[in-house]
Amino acid sequence: MQAAQLMKYDKNFKLVVKDIAIPTPNKNEVLVKVKVAAVNPLEMLIGTGSVKLIQDYKMPLTMGNELSGVIESVGKNVDNFNIGDEVYSRLPLTKIGAFAEYVAVDYRAIALKPKNLDFVHSAAVPLTGLTAYQGVTEELQAQSGQSVMIPGGSGSFGQMAIPIAKQLGLKVMVSGNARSKQSSLEMGVDQYFDYRKENYWEHLKDIDYVIDTIGKKEFDHELQILKPRGRVLSLIMGPNRQFAKNRHLSFLKTTLFSIAGSPIDKQARKSDVDYRFIFVRSDGEQLKKITQIVETNQIKPAVDPTEFKLADINEALNYVATGHPKGKVVISF
Image 1 (cartoon, rainbow, N blue to C red):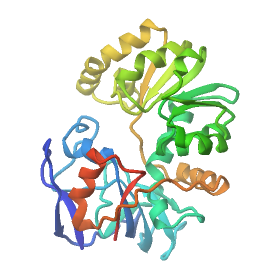
Image 2 (image 1 turned 120 degrees about the vertical axis):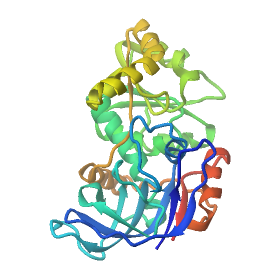
Image 3 (image 1 turned 30 degrees about the vertical axis):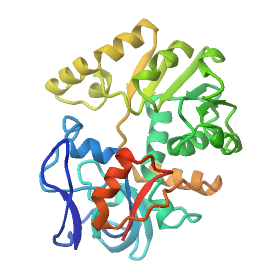
Image 4 (image 1 turned 45 degrees about the horizontal axis):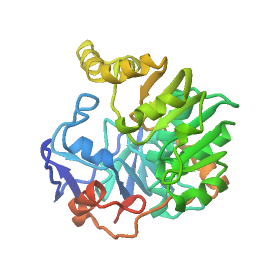
């Protein structure tokens, strides 16, 4: 089969498409014939070696974290999936490989794809869906009646985070561009700020949680609106000591993350706020809940119209990094 592989970490990495053997699933895995794989900024972090302290891979590495496809065979311990099932997945962090014609995946990392979505749009859901779900329920431990602000939440992350937060009973505020206002309000957003016309930090205070999708340049404004002992969860700013402790990382890694995250932690402490960082993991049971949310709310994630095949993988990666895509970039097989 054809697969796109990383040969070594490199800040200017390029993937090599080559023929490798079709994987044989173990007793807890299914073999999936990949229909569509999504290309994410996470690929850049992996390829450049930026996340090797969190997850270091053996080379050569078949890349790709997110896919939709059809089950071709099942391991002997798998009794809840069948050959022919249409599934989707955020692949386990320790065993990625969506940029290939076939992939063997642990059955605990997959779910049946949403009935209202085709393979292309299904492949755009797992990573953002699980990030939103794990962010709201685990990292923030948000409760019904509490409030969350998502600066820059009008994009693909917000498409999943808004209905999940609303389903959990939260009051949701979002800032974003003018063209996304109507769709965000239709998803149930309580307050929408067009960032070109108004500054959310001039209107909000005593918010329970902030989910940061923008990074350090927005941090001061995010801290400004949180109530004492509020919490900010970042998808971007990087891990800290708390991240390492939650994952029971080694003393060395905990020390390194403590040092790297200390300026952010210090700034948060000064405002009496708790800082968290998320690096999303696979979870088939959570993905089932996300499927229900997608079907109930008839969510159709934005997908960039540019067509890429596996042979175009480096162009697709470059487009994600520099091209301002209009939604998730995908590779069709």
